[in-house]
Length: 392
Image 1 (cartoon, one colour):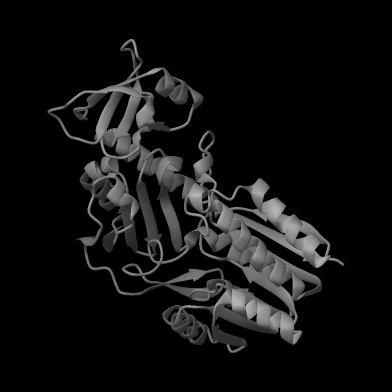
Image 2 (spheres, rainbow, N blue to C red):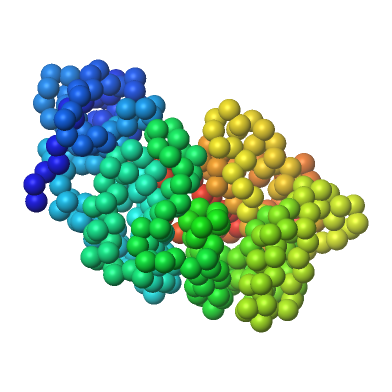
C-alpha cells in the first residue's frame, strides 16, 4: 500500500531521551520543530535532533501530548493499520475466547493510540480519542468491516479528552443501526450494555474477569457499594444468601432491577443512597456483612485531585472494614491511575490500623486481559482490585 504523507517532527534532547526510554508519549516540551505538511494532518515522521528518522507517531498540534508513537518504521500505510487490528483481535481470541463482550483494541496497548474498539456480540462501539486516531478513522472502520462484518458500528466520540485534541464531542452512527440496548452473556449472567448513553462504550468491560471471580468468592450477606447497573451484584447473587446493591443514581438502579428480573434473580435489594452515608449508618446500626464490594468511580482524575481522593478511598474502606464480619471478604477497587498500587496499599493499611482489624491479601488483580498492560507505559495499568480476607 502507498504510505501516507507525514509531517516531519524533530525532537530535542528531552524528547529523544523520552523516545529512547520506550514510553510512547512525547510531550510538547520534547519537541524542537514541527514542520507543516501538505498531506494529511495527524501523522508524523519522528526525527532525531540531527535529522535521522526514529519512527512514526500520531501528531496532535493542540494537545500537550504532541506525539504518540505508532512504530519504529519510516512510514504509515493501510497495511500497518490492518496488521495492528489483526494482531489485537487475535490476542483477544487467545486470552478471552468465547467472550460475547470484549475490548478488541485498547489504544497504546495495541499500538493504535487513541483508538478504542469494543465488541458487543455483532455490534461494535468505537472511540477515536486523539487527532491522529480521528485522521485514521475511515481506514480503521473500513478494516473493521472487512475483518469482522459487524451488524453495526457506533462512534462514541463524546469523552472530554477529545476537546484537548481540538475535536468535537459527538456520537455518530457509522454503519448499520446500533440498538438502544445490547444484551450479552458474562459467564452465566446476562448483562445489558447501553451503547449511546452508558458509561464508557456502554458497559464496564474492564471489570469482567473480576466480576467472574466475585461470583466464585461471594458468600452469605453481600453488600455491593457503588453498584451502578448491578453487574457485580448479579454475579455475587449466584452463590450469596442475599445482596444489597447501593448507588446514588436512580436510573442506574432501575437498570439493575431490570437486569435482575431478566436473570430471574430474587435475592437482591436495591437502595438509592450516598454510599458514604449508607456505610456510616450501617455501622451505627450494627449491621454486618460476609462480603463487601467497593467499586467507586475515579476519585482522582488528575494529580491535583489525588490528596482528596486518598481521603475518600480511606473513608470508604475504613467504613467497609468496620461492618465486615471476621472471616469476611472485601473486594476493593480503584480505577484512578494516579492512585498507584503502592498508595492503595498504604490506604488499606491505614484503614485497617484505624479499625484495629487484620486482613490477608488473597489476590491482587487488575483490569481484564482484553485491556492489556503495555511494558514501558505505566498509564495502561489503571485498574486495581484487591481481595482481602478479614481474620481478626
